Each structure stands twice: as structure tokens, then as C-alpha cells.
Length: 252
Ligand code: PGA
Image (cartoon, rainbow, N blue to C red; front, top):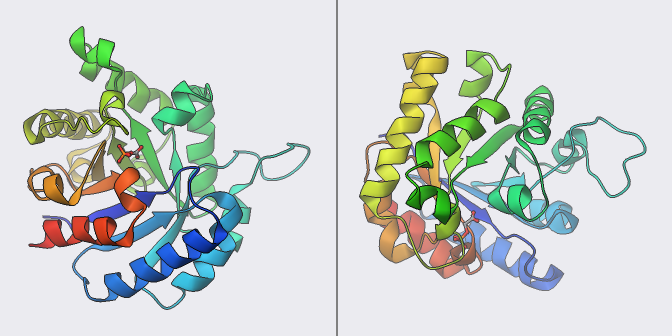
């Protein structure tokens, strides 16, 4: 089994004080749990301050989004270099909320993934189907199209440098989690897709996270599946106890 990555996506939550307290709590607890890789992705306005709290801890810093251009007249946007400048190692790209609420397309995401890799960041590239797409039996078709569109023109080495995340939209923030078997089926299909489009070495090595209502109580079963290499956690990443509990469940 690959070393699991437990990633917290704090989304648009917390204030400065609460973000710093959470960072301290996660950093302290993670020191006791060295068998997983830890990552937190705070709101961008708190990245710098949270990064300082995480210095000399085993917890990495990531951003929830960024823009593909290097600099210039793009009001409100952040470049990949700005993220590395404040200590980010990862950036979440193509999250379903960016796709479905903010209207990002595969083309937007593909440009961002290329820019993140150029900047030396690890993109966490998210894919996932809507409930009506799953009900219509279109899950793998949708996920494949997002995969192909978001990773278009990348080399095998570049795909290897990405983390993939399968997040069924109907399971995000709903408390309705995919069963371990449902998640494993899509993860296995995604790995086959990587083998088909690139090669079997990259397919075996690339980390594929599951996201969607992951909690301490279901993390062990989900991450016990062959092709699930970690979790992208929203709601349960907002308290150190739950977030660390996910790591504990996986390691035990
Ligand atoms: P959730 O969010 O854990 O609150 O379902 C997951 C995600 O959006 O990454």
C-alpha cells in the first residue's frame, strides 16, 4: 500500500484565529502519527500565517485554487509562484465546487494543472460525477472526460507528479458517502485509464484520493480499498480531532 495522503480542504471556512488554532492542533497531532502524509489547504488569505504555524511540522501546506497566468492584470487572482512563495507544495484544482459553482471548464483546469507543474507544485486534480450522471450509468464516461480534458497534453512524468482525487459530487458535504465498493470501482477504472493513456508504471504509482463525506468512522474501510491512496476531506478537516482521527483510522 502507498503511504496515504490525508488532505484537508478547509474551503471558505474559519477566521484567522480559528485557522491558526486548527493548524497548531493538526501540527501537534500529526507529529504522533508519522505513517501518513498530512496536508491542509486553508483559505488563501490565511496561507502565509498557517504556513508559519506549520513550519517544522510534518504537515504540508496547499492552496484551494490559483490562476494559470504567471502575473499581470488579473484582478483577484493568485499565481502559482505566489503559492510557492508562501510555502505551498500542493494546489487543489478542478474541485467540483470550482467546476459547478464557479463554472470552471476542463480547459481552465488543464491550463492551471500545467502552470502548477511548471511552478513545482503538486496539483490535486479532482474529478467526479453528479448524482443524475451516476443514476444514468454515466459515471466512468463523465470521469474519463474530466480526466482527459484536465490532463490534456501532459507527459507520463507530469501525470506521475499529480495527485488525482475522485469526489462524487453527490457525496460532497452531504453526509452521503460512496460505499467502499462504489469508490473502489471508480478508482480502479481511473487507474486503468492512466495505464491506457500513459503506462502501467505511472498507473501503479499515481496517488488517487477519495473525497466526499470522509469521517473517522468510514475512513478505515474506504482507505482499506486497493486503489484508494488517501482522502480529500472537507467538513471533517475543520476540527483537529476529526481530521487526525481519519489518519488514525487509516493507520490502524
Ligand atoms: P466533504 O468535502 O468531506 O465535506 O464532503 C470533500 C471535498 O469537497 O473535498
